[in-house]
Length: 134
Image 1 (tube, rainbow, N blue to C red):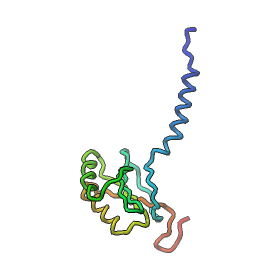
Image 2: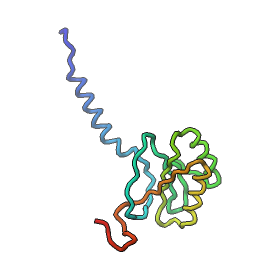
Image 3: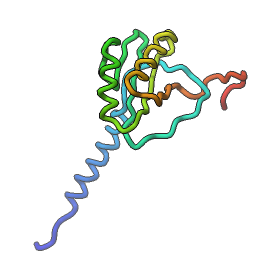
Image 4: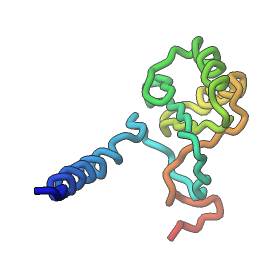
């Protein structure tokens, strides 16, 4: 037989496609946080993977999924900022975290070289003018 049989190749490619379609949603940052709800709109996405800093309800600070001590935060952020082309960072904080601690983390982000800080919230919350979304 002088022809190439492409049927096994197509079968393998379809299986790989299904595996990637199932596993892709699982690759997002998976730190469980109860985000506050607001009526804010979403930010435009960058070409670079966004850096995410999370403050959990029990006051742990995570860069992406790596836990970081508060006194080491600025040093690690400076090292990360030196390697990135974008100064955008997303701050996720649990709604139960005190405002003071969120502001301290924001100050550390600024001192670490990130001036473009986006606060992550859940959409569909109450608006300040008293009217509900939707």
